[in-house]
Length: 147
Length: 147
DNA sequence: TATTGTTATACTCTATAACTATA
DNA sequence: TATAGTTATAGAGTATAACAATA
Image 1 (spheres, each protein chain N blue to C red):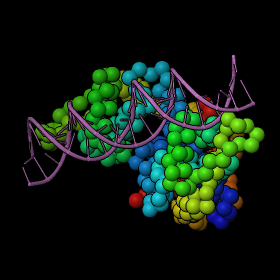
Image 2 (cartoon, rainbow over the protein chains, first blue to last red):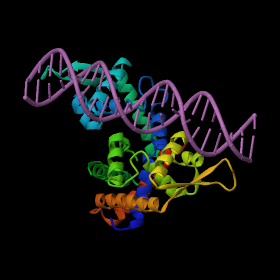
Image 3 (tube, protein in one colour):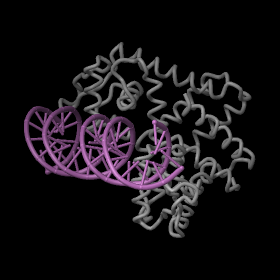
Image 4 (cartoon, rainbow over the protein chains, first blue to last red):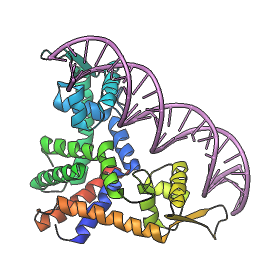
């Protein structure tokens, strides 16, 4: 990338995205009316949905939250009936986290809501444009979070 | 956009970007070695730079942080010599926040660093891909943050 | 001895409430 | 009476440290 204005535009957009008001607004919308999940436990629930069955330690590394916080939020989700704990047959120290059917349903609802937002933002793009955008965004986030 | 996997990828990337560890990591890098500003006060300093001179109440609305937190972080920045308070000539109740020359310098340094990160992340992209990405990201963020 | 899960503790961020000065 | 700035207080998130069980 060469243009400085392009960088400046990306910088401004990321700044807005990282603003607290944007984050809470987005998360609040996604979990509105859903019982047992909130803006705090959402990353944990979403991570379990993606990598299940997974141990708390591994999940913590995947989602970038401390493992003590991960296990506490997982406990909350378990109390809400969205997450299940099963012993790891390969390691008696470990416990594997999984979604319950209720958890499955809520995750699907949240994803549908976000997809709705994404579709609103990309409704008139060519099909392959969204795919290219996804790839670019992944690479950018990967770079920004590794520095 | 139609593909569900594309949406899922964007969702995961945004989730990672909004995560606290990513944000603090990014902010920490931007303010490393700069005296008087940290990941918490950065949005306030950046907001003052953009909208100065501005009252604490108005700034709070712009950056999405409560006005009580805004005034406290502004006080920190003032103690560090980066921000100045001047009375509002139009309203004796109000106080306007402005950058000092030292604050100006630090803001410029931080922006250069972020732009540097972005250019490093997109160095090997084709020129038009970065531009398309910037446009797409702007529209997405705009959609996500709209009330 | 190292690792997993968990709990206890302390620290920081942030919003709600309350107070003072001014419109 | 309403609003701006500020301070006090309380609630929530998160990391560090410590502990028991198991590798």
